[in-house]
Length: 394
Image 1 (tube, rainbow, N blue to C red):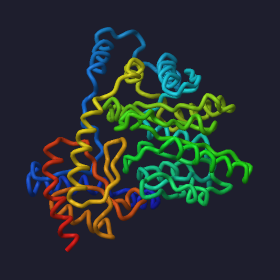
Image 2 (image 1 turned 180 degrees about the vertical axis):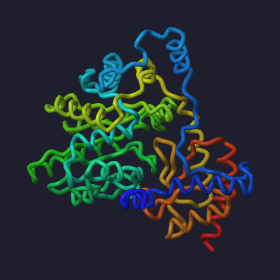
Image 3 (image 1 turned 90 degrees about the vertical axis):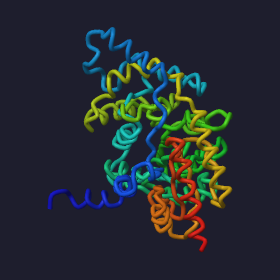
């Protein structure tokens, strides 16, 4: 018997990225790692900026007493204040340290948020394509995921969202820039989405949160300012991390930011803080909190990811792949040349190229590739993409 049936079923449902990892290892053993081109994982390639190392060394060389002890579960006050100041500049809103909770990455931020707001059976609307783990985050906290759709440009379909919202809806979760599509939800999209939510609140007499998952916010390939959710809906919450913008995926450091205009944010912050502790996260890592407090205006060199995007997008579209050009993040989500995206993934795999089928992101008929890899991997994958496309077309 061993593990629970629920966990066994969830493991089967979430196996696509894990399966690709295992396939990459097997293919590398058979053909040599240099001949296998793994574009399945979203593992940040760029190293943290030099400011990170400088601050890490400063702390190591001048370690103050209490550096590694517990702090308030919401995080060091000085770190929360530093994050709030950065958001106040970026948004023009009056963020203060009390509006911020430091977390063990964006995954923890979402889980503690859901624990704070969901009763058993409450619903969370997800917009496909979405990060595959979202359904498990919602389910783990007693909620029910409900999937809405997007248009061909990956902007959310408002009619689909309107139909998905019921009197049990407690939140709508968005991710922009989006994993897997790289789409950025525009200001007009956010305004429309907030309107749909507010109409539903009036219709059902409920309160619905708009939760924005933003770990790729600073990885943008447009000169336009980032469209924040805060001006559009008072019950808005951001969950984010420094995994991508500072290249710190393994350090698990992120935060929750609550709209300073939300009148019940004090109770919400207390609930999230309680959930942060009792879910076992306790607090975000102490040294990382101290470091990122000094790096709120620092990012990796986004131009390197932009060059990779341009290279892959140009190459694939010239071959004949249909693809929306990513505006941010480091993923591309082309349409599968075969109706069955899993079949096409297997075809690519036969060419020693590994990607992930769109069904794993709630959107069959597409596939995701990550371009946050070495240039030799991107270049080496192109013949496989070309051969697979030719074979798919017969």
